[in-house]
Amino acid sequence: MRQIVLITIILCIFTSVYAAEYYSCDKTNTYVHLGDNLAHVKQACGMPISSSTKKIQPTKTLQVTRWTYNRIPQESFEDYELHPEKDVLVFDFDQQDNIVQIQIGGKQVKQISSRLLGKAIKIGDPRYIVAQAYLAPNSIKELTIKISQKQIVIQTTLTYQQASYMPPTKLIFQNDKLIKIE
Image (cartoon, rainbow, N blue to C red):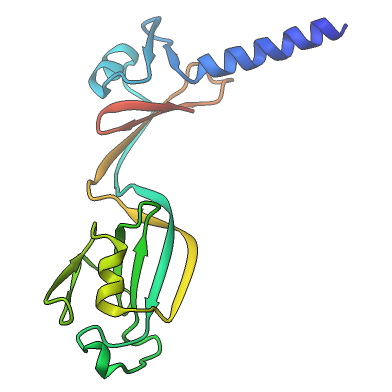
């Protein structure tokens, strides 16, 4: 009995893994696979029962070390002055100690000028440059953040239903490539 249960579980796992990699088009009796393009899927499966397209901006999750300064960034260190929450300067560093995000007053910027160094500090620069320009931060925290990617992705969802008694299947495309079958 145990062997039958174990075999049944293995078969369920095996079929569910492969079910997510391809879809059987009912009308043409052909298969479409992950990685196929949108035109091929429409040709193979015909018109879906519904279709939607939207633009999304992907995000990346990173573990960062956040240095926060509560001073006006344009002032030199000698003119140090606290401005709680108004002019907060934030640097986020990745695991390789490079700047991945800079914020001034809650707004993201690509770079910030430093009078002390006589040049701009920008995303990608190493942590030691920030330490040279602004010395010790008011706070240091380890946290997880989401950073928006530069490119916009076009996501299209086609919904097909093979039979009225079966739930519909969603084929999800990003930039015209099939990436997910639900």
